[in-house]
Amino acid sequence: MTLQTDQSIDTSPIAVAADGPGDLDPLWRAVETEMRTRSNDIHVPISFAFAERLCEAYPEADSLVVRVAILLHDSGWARVDETKIISEGFGANWRQAQIRYEHELKGCLIAREVLPGLGYDEAFITRVTDIIDGHDTRVESYSIEDSLVRDADRLWRFTPAGIALASSWFGQTPSFYCRRLRTEILPELITAAGLEMATIELDRAEALLKIAVL
Image 1 (cartoon, one colour):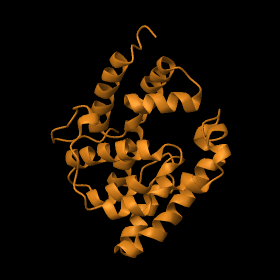
Image 2 (tube, helix red, strand yellow):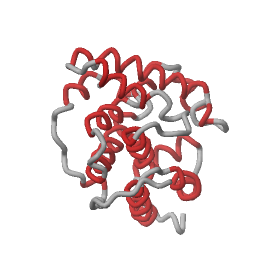
Image 3 (cartoon, one colour):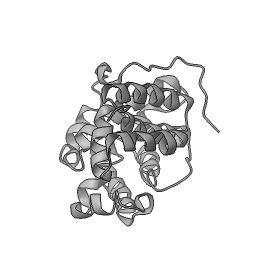
């Protein structure tokens, strides 16, 4: 069932999203090295911006849990075999590739390494790692915070930057990948806000990238 909201939904281009509060800057700095793998330094900030918009649309969610979890969710890619990230992580059975389970586990370990020193307690850290663990491989969402992180993780794919990177990872043309976004990824979105954001963002991206003729 799609998670509805009675709040306004910001569907303006994510590329013009205002710079948010700097309260998590120490955490960004703590995982700077991990952001340099698998284009996390592009993927994660874009997904983070979407997560902040989703938190505005669903104020009942714990926004700090969502923001910290999305910031750290893919940090584990930095500690797996980089030669397998594309060959296995984006292969025919990519959703259940062992390396995806590995990056989730490593992401949880990184969270437990960096968060205590930044003042986060055990209960909070467990809420974050419960989301990171399974964000790619687990079918069901366990909480509203989990749902917002999952949607934010997918929403970046609908931007020109997401389409460019993901189509190259999968070895597909942008037009083919955009068709996949419409048929495979849009139905996976959990929130009504995420679905609206994704649809409008993809419409803009397809027009910009001349998908109709290329």
